[in-house]
Amino acid sequence: MWQALHDLSDSRNFVNALMAHKIDLAFGAFMLILTLHYVIYILPIQVPIWDGAVYLENAKNWLEGEPLYRAFRPQLFSWIISGIWSITGENWLIIKYLQVSFTLGAGIVLYLTLRKYKGGLFAIGVVSLTMLNAQVFYFSVQMLTEGISLFFLVLALYFLKGKNAKHWPLGGVSIGLTFASRYPIILQALVIMVVESLIRSNPRIFMRAMIGAIPVISIVVLVLFLKTGTFEVALEQDTGVSVLLSPFYIMRAIPIWSFAILLVPVAFLFRKTYTDKYNYTFIAWFLVSLVFWSANASNHQERFAIQYAPAVYFLAILAVENIVKSKPIFQRAREHKTLQTGLEISSSPGSARSQTAIAPLGQEEMKQLKASVSAIVEGLHMEGITEAYKPIRIGALQLPAVSIADELLHMEATQEEYKPIRIGALQLPAVSIADVTQFQSSTTNSPPRRIPMPQMPGYYRKEGEPENIIYQEGFED
Image (cartoon, rainbow, N blue to C red):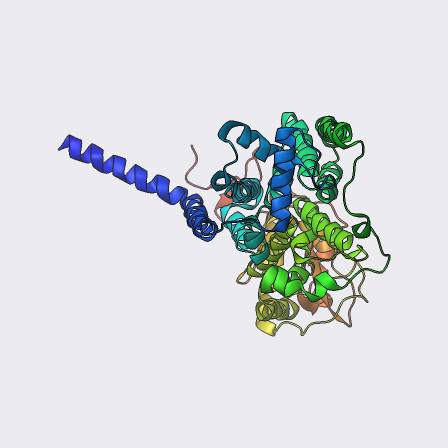
């Protein structure tokens, strides 16, 4: 029996552990299904597209020591292929799954990055939209550099967002590898590094990241210079810059990012977007990337938006989060109306003309107010307390504890108008101040007074005894 109870306890603990990590398990299931889908899609591919063939040719040139076929192409992907072929030989079956492995790795790193601060549900929303993006999916199954550059860019984000200073140089190394995988994407990596340093007011992030980035970039440039005698980053016709930004990415926004792009402007309408500095990195990442690619004079392609797709979908999910957490308009309007009918907030303390009069209290309410204030004042004076802080009850209304002296001093002394009464930081509905002024003159300008004990027949006091002690005749000790 005890064994059965122990087994039952273990099973409950197992179920509780599963429920505690249900979002992580859902993410794992999503990535597994996505991986199978990639494999099914890649399996029938027999030959690479033209750009993919160029990277394979460069890899063969590095392996055999021949001149590069296209020296302006980024070489990191070709170096990795050369390293694999040096062990396995020129095997196409292995290489054609290489690109997608980096894309899937980028999804995992992005999830781990966002989960730390935004939570698992937010992270899985951003990652699922990024991984299911048509551009990301299609170009990840080709022999191109979109997947590998996205991986190292997100890896740089992961290290630079972290609080461990030992990881910041690794973020710099990731920036260098981003440059080696696709030259223009270094701008996005540098934006992440600079913004993180600024929003956290920590220049060490920048300095330590540069310690890791500069050697990697220098090695890449030096190796290519020694190999080719020059260093090129693109074709000459693709390097033109125009002051007039191209509307290509705006007009093609829905085909590139789907209808989720429509939520991005909504994110900028909420104050919460700006109060949380964590969001600034993704805002800058999105805006700088969009402007950079739009400033190109001639070369505009939908696949150029792949690397900053995580920033786009981060803002889209952020808009959804802000909408869900904000109060509906009708609820806010109802609360505002209730506040106006019950309380009137003064624009400045002591300014009678800046307040709006509210309908006066009825006769019964006025009696309750007078009786309550009188009882409070008299009770405090009986105890010899003038600055006591106690809760105040007026009819059915329970007020926070305030100083009675504050209460009386903030009353507006006027005979004709009905104005709100200010008790500390709280504004009460308007009543006639003439009805309660009598309590002010007896409490604020005179010393505390005690209520005399009544003289009753058959009772007497002894000299030297406190005034509140009386004796009854016939019952002396």
